[in-house]
Image 1: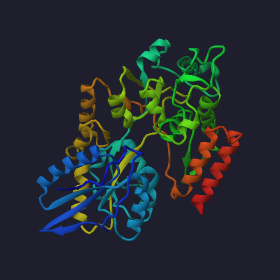
Image 2: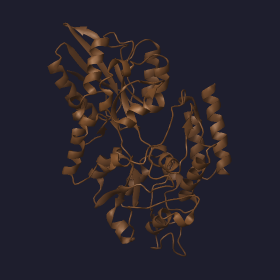
Image 3: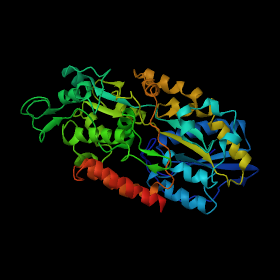
Image 4: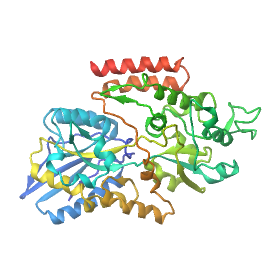
Length: 441
């Protein structure tokens, strides 16, 4: 098997690195072999897991060589678009939910519903649903983040006398909200006063209760969904027109700027790792996040920590979930070999190495147990992640052309969390209208 390492990346499901020039449709012939290239973003651990998987595949298919190409996340999709538009690109490549619909619509992807119809039932239903468009599935689900959880510092939570197991939040009913009062008890200033005590100094916080921030994946999406809201629907953004979404957003922003139970946007807007690092330093009591942070917290925390369910909103505990598919290039020069590789990575045997080292949860259900077994040996019950979707997940229809609006939307959200945007519903309306104008143009 050929494995090309293209440098260290930083990564997981939705965040990572990458840049490299790759040969168009790079299947090739070498001594009677077909070479199928497989493009991913991610860290070296995931690439090594694929290497292990493909070594077993090649033993069973000696006429096919699989080459893994790591490409940095930073410009992964810019490079992919350029390669595919020129009739090239790798034979198989990772795609995420915000980007797949454009490729499916323009005929760049292999229709998995037609190519592997009998395999679909063995894949995580949430991932199958997310990547089904116009009645067809457009990739083989590979990795999921399950639901979201609360990582918590056991000592800080115990010292505050807080039970995290059944907290609720409600933007329209203060009496039903047990989440904010808990966060206030977990937020402490430099004089030892908590945020619910007289004299609390919000300008001198030494320990924050929670990681509320402009983070759609870990925070905003979960609150919007748990309040029965929508962020996007029918190919456009709708967050400003949906009253439940607006209320959830105001609640989260209020945790930062009104209640001061979460770090300032000056620290979090441009540093997605700030809150996690504060948690690891013992300066943040509760971190809402996904399985993608499990390994770093397990390795980096020098204190006892645990996992608890996210707080229940008016509609229950409904998180945003992410997943990745491996899509087949419809222009591959070796479609039969490419299909064999797609079938392999959609099997339990082919996907087990992805979870065996505890990096991420495989989307192939038969391959998930090694992931849970790995974490069980570490004393962690990782089944809490998939159990977190029992109430449902955020309905988040793809927005074709969304990348055109990404930069301006990002800027608008940062201004809202910084408290500089004025009236939040009005700021959301302006951001939504601008984004929808950009994607329609």
